[in-house]
Length: 114
Image (cartoon, rainbow, N blue to C red; front, side):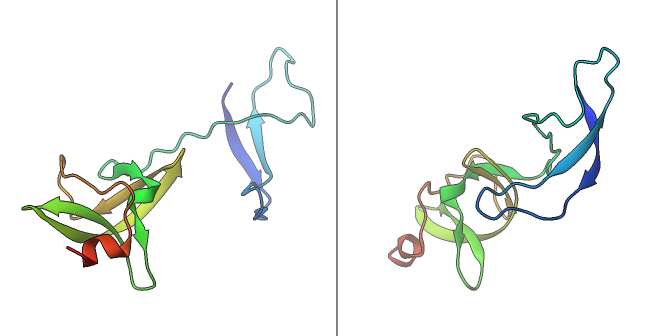
């Protein structure tokens, strides 16, 4: 079944990162009853220019967000912006090229020691 978001509570539970949302769904066969709860999968278009990397690849400091890539046998910090997150992965945009190797478990010490 598909539906359209009709109302949002605007109140996110910080412990579970949940929010009450109501959907309008066509129910011609009466399979759904008023007040039922459901597990819902939201499809997000995201950014077609973005790249998906493991969340552990993104370093967030007080000054910036970046990933560490290997370029010309050296490690470099590349500033990124982040987008959608799902199942341990995050969408990033930045000065990255397809095929570049991104450090999986990045941290500030890795690039500084290079």
